[in-house]
Amino acid sequence: MYLTLWKTYNPTFSQVEIWFRFVFVVLTFMVTCLFAHSLRKFSMRDWGIEQKWMSILLPLLLLYNDPFFPLSFLVNSWFPGMLDDLFQSLFLCALLLFWLCVYHGIRVQGERKCLTFYLPKFLIVGLLWLASVTLGVWQTVNEVHDPTYQYRVDTGNFQGMKIFFLVVATTYILYLLFLIVRACSELRNMPYVDLRLKFLTALTFVVLFCKLCSVKQKFRITFTLLFISVPDPKQLFQIAAGFWIVLSG
Image (cartoon, rainbow, N blue to C red):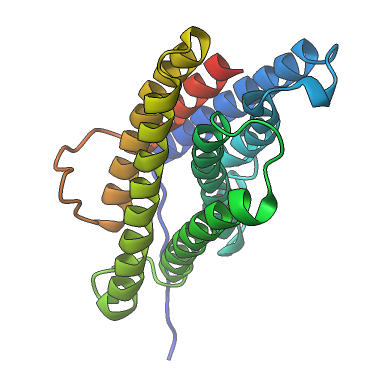
């Protein structure tokens, strides 16, 4: 018994996607070089919390655009797709961790202890990263081995992981809102810090909204407060994240 497997690609769409990612890889590389050049005169001890995190987020943004994406058209394997899911999850979770650290760190001056400051944040974001990587890789691997694969058929495994993801994501959002309210209530009378908080909060909600739309479209997760569908949410999020990082740097 012989099994014939046919795979078809839309050449126009594939070319647009490759060029789209390539342009963002080049732009991210240029922004990273400009950012490093602008801070070359300052010691790392003098960097603010935003500058320190930008030095981590910009290289991760470069990976988020996946320079190895064309391999998915050249290699008949699940590995390029897994790399794409891994890079995206890594950058997004680093961005989520940055928001928690910056909203908490802007209130806590001086030494930030690992046990009380970083450990709870790493725990929440680490669980989100584990859930997102598992969901993304599971779907990618199954789609490579079976192009007709539908996640609705595998509802048992997907449903449990989706519930786990939603519980952890809800915990994260509540914790983030708590830190935002505390920071705004305690530092609103300080002119420079107040401006930083307004700018950061506005762009945080824009990027978070785009990401929720992307998750909703990819895994068909229904959010109680989110019923708006936007075209190409992944591209919207990419543009918003890049715009936010350029302005913050």
